[in-house]
Amino acid sequence: MIDVRDLVFRYPVGDFRLDVPALSVKRGETVAIVGASGSGKSTLLSLIAGILRPDAGEVTVSGVSVSKLADGARRDFRLHQLGLVFQEFELLDHLDVRDNVLLPCRLSPRVTISAEIEQRAEALVREVGLGEKLRRNVRRLSQGERQRVALARGLLLEPTLLLCDEPTGNLDPGTTSDVLELLLERTRERGTTLLVVTHDHDLLPRFGRVLDMKDFQAGVRGAGVG
Image 1 (spheres, rainbow, N blue to C red):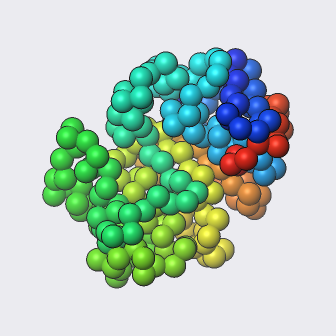
Image 2 (cartoon, one colour):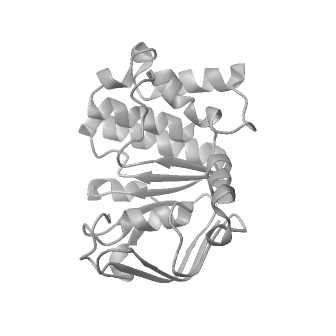
C-alpha cells in the first residue's frame, strides 16, 4: 500500500531535514505515528499524501509513484484515493455541517452527490454524535465538534488510505474512544489502511503497529513541522 524509499525532505526556511531510508505499510494496517514535537510526523503524512514533494527519494501509494506526479494529478489522486483529516480541520466556515462533509464531492466533476452519498454523509454525522447539528453552521461548533465534522468528511468517499493528524486531540476521553472505534471499525470493514498521528499514548494498544519518528533522522529547528 505505502512504500517510501530513500526519502529526503527539507523546508525552504530553517534547518529541518527528514530522512526516511525505508518505510512500508501493508494494505489494511492500522498504524499510529508518534514522536516529539518537530520530529516530522505531520510532514511525513503530507509527503505520503503528495501535499509536499520530497527533495529526493520516492513515495509510492497503491502502486502509484505519488512523488513523481504533476500537481494536478497529485490533487486528483488525493481526492479519489485518500481520506485526509487535518490538524487544523480545514472546514469552510460559511457552510453547515452537512455541506462540509460533502465538500470532497464538490471538488471533482468525477464525483456526483447521489442519494447514496447524501445518506452516507448524514449517517457519518450521526455516528460522530452530531446528528442534531446537521444543518448548523460550523462557526457555531466547538473545537471538538469541528474535529468530528472533519473525521466524517475524511470517511465519506470510503478511501483506500486514511491519513489523520491528531484526530482526537480536541476531544474528551469518552468521545476520543468513540471516534477511534469508529475509525477502526470503518477501516476494518473496507480493508482501508489507517495512519494516525497521535500524542495520546493510551491509544497505542488499539493499533496494529506503532511507528516512532525517532527511528528516522530529523532536524527540529525548522518552522511549521509536526
